[in-house]
Image (cartoon, rainbow, N blue to C red; front, side, top):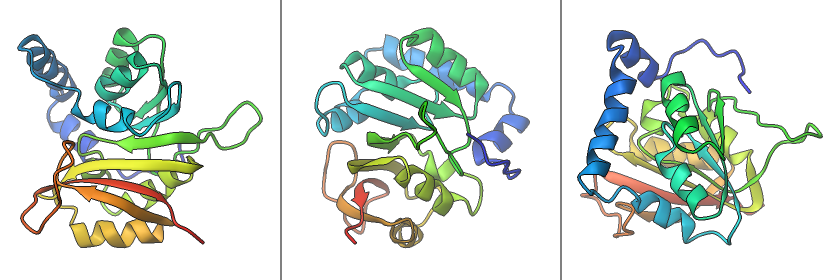
Length: 208
């Protein structure tokens, strides 16, 4: 599943300086859930794209907050993340789904016959691209594109204030063999404009 890359992601670097990062992340969302905050906007967006029982790849799944909700909505979810503490929480909360340790740059999930696993939707929410290792976002997009079924969709959401410029993202989308179907300023599907500081992009494999 890994390609031996040595460059650490921003999340890994922050975890080295703050060993409580994952624990604080888990506790933060547990607190928000207890307060009744709606945490399922991403899952509603993705669920609307899918038939029942679809295969879904949660890229950078963390605790499984989004993927687990999609599993609750009958989808077959595989999640991938680098943080073992977050993965342990995902496995605890959503034991019926599949949670794998892996780097999204060079990700190569295989089925029992050795063929690439393909999904109806691949998604990366929660600033996953912004937390990628420097210079690796293009490779991450290529890896995720390689796991799309022929009519599948790739969905990513990230802050445009995290050091990953929109122009670079657009160039890397094209280089990964993808094209945009729609772009929004958030998971509620408001129009993306020049003043937006967050993007949700819906993509598909580019037409030859």
